[in-house]
Image 1 (cartoon, rainbow, N blue to C red):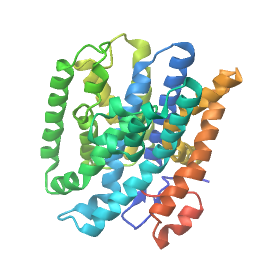
Image 2: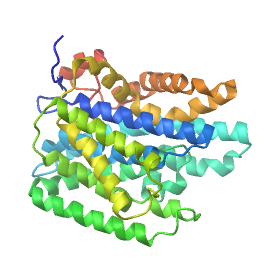
Image 3: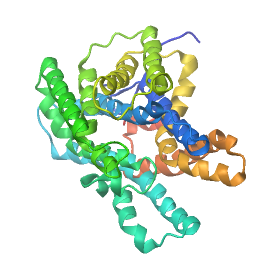
Length: 358
């Protein structure tokens, strides 16, 4: 089979699946799982790998949401489109989040002796997604869920943001992103030291991550000139991003040039993937990693506990991928198909195992 840029029509002809974005999503999920494994098992911290692996998700999210839903919110917001969008978002995030949160609550109870009376309140807020309305970094009860709290808030705002941006010039959007970057800088400089107990709750706020989401709006407006070179440039950006903490000692949480450079690399990884051609030989890998990315992100802590219990933590990658795959196959995908069934014209691609529109 010759190398081609592979795309699949999804719900309608304007919603084209982009495998290179799917690949970046999968790689970022792997980076977060790897970061936690090295930190938990070997106390070896590669901050930029885990931290900005998560932040890249926010850039990806905005691009994919606009790619899929921009036309629905261009010029007006209908009640039917709004309801459809929120049902899709709920189906995408909450079922697996709820299942993982409940499992985590049971694990902490039986393994660490914590009482349900102590845990159920935060677990309820996390599992339902309502923790997004307060302080997800403090309320979150399962690994990585704090970022979903921020993401859910961006989902709530997305239809209005898409409507506003549909009437804005690219230059105006760029100025908004620049303003968000300045506001982010002011916030980071006003926070306590990262070692302070109150730092995390104040850091994991929407304003910290708004520039990443805003960058996705700007990338969506960029001209797409598909090429194989762009895939390489995207992978280069990810490599520099994840390897930064191996090369430099700067804190990745401190506002300033370092944070801005890492933000640029996260945006660059998505920008180039947005216009990348994916060799057909890489398509199965992109599909697999992209499909299990959300499950891997939420469940890799379970894999680590299983590997630790076995006494051979080196089997963590196999267990993590296996649990992620079965979580995607038996929890995430069925829940999404039940809560938000795909249109009839997308049924054939669903049966073939292709991902639905984000």
